[in-house]
Image 1: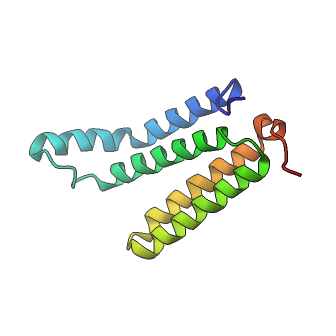
Image 2: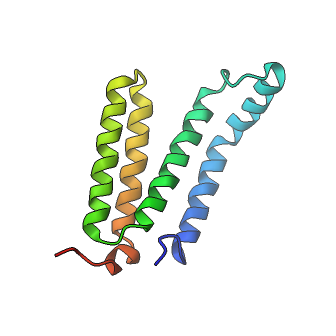
Length: 123
């Protein structure tokens, strides 16, 4: 049972394409800034977007490995607690909110999927 099978591969492709389209101008800006001074400090938004997308992909893989519905819900709760702790220590609240929204959106997509419907409940 794989979360990214069939229609999910198409969905992932579309999400990736939309992400790429949104961040293409920033990538060009990033390349120009990096070629000037070799530092990333000129394009922090691109770095944040990449970090959010990587975390979302990691969460998607973790959901795909859940054996029960309750395990998936516990994973979401643990991730939520992790992000709340992170929010207390970081000053960039917008970044944390964006991460939370990405994780919650991924979980919402997962519970609507056939893969979620197919995994058993603990009860």
